[in-house]
Structure formats: C-alpha cells, structure tokens
Length: 91
Image (spheres, rainbow, N blue to C red):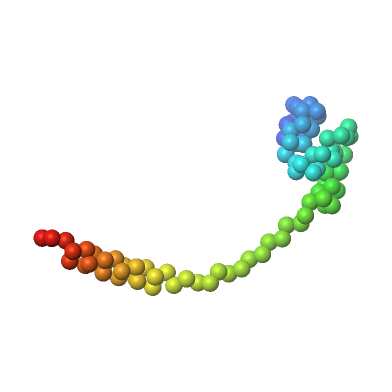
C-alpha cells in the first residue's frame, strides 16, 4: 500500500486503512502498538501464523444423478396427466 501510494499518503492514514482490512484478532493486537508500518506488518504476519487456523480444503465427489432418465420419467408423467385432464374436460 505504501508503494502504491507513491509517498502521497501519510503513514498514519495508511495504518488506519490497513488495520481495517485485517482480521479482528490481528487488529486487536496491532491497534495498541505505535511501531512503524513495516514493523507492524512483521508482527501481523507472526500473529497470523499463530492465531489464525490454517484453511483445510477437501473435495468429495457427489454421486452422479441420472438426470436424463429422471427428465424422461417426468415428461412421461406430464403426458399422462395431460391425458387424464383431457378426459375429464367436457367437449
């Protein structure tokens, strides 16, 4: 953020923006510190390594559905219902 601002923004403003985007656990730790932004970034990395749970991703395959057969069965039922309705209707 510091580099992107090209030195146009004060450190205190950058600190405020940066802190708002961190997880609340890390915000709580860093908000009481008066360190430089670079030092705060180091501390944030260390806190994140310890405090934040590592994400675990798993994938499972869902059983394949025979949607084509199901659609055909539904279409057949619709035709049968139409026939029943037409038989009940008066000409």
